[in-house]
Length: 103
Image (tube, rainbow, N blue to C red):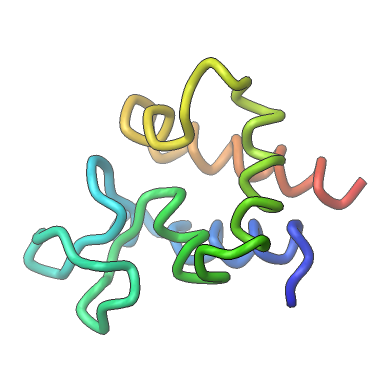
């Protein structure tokens, strides 16, 4: 099992290229259709979709998202943050969350 910092880093790596990041869906195919994060057709992911793709939806998922909430605050959901901010802002939040998880 990965540490939260490792999970967050792998998720960040997955969406580091803007072509592999999406909004308003957990995952999308190359054609832009919403697909499961587990689908072999999934090519782009939202923040939560990337974490789910990396670690699944188990305790590792919740351990990793805990650090994102420390950065964005609990007033926003991670999905809302992903959908209302730029790719660069999402990566910045992940960077801070990764550092918090390492501490």
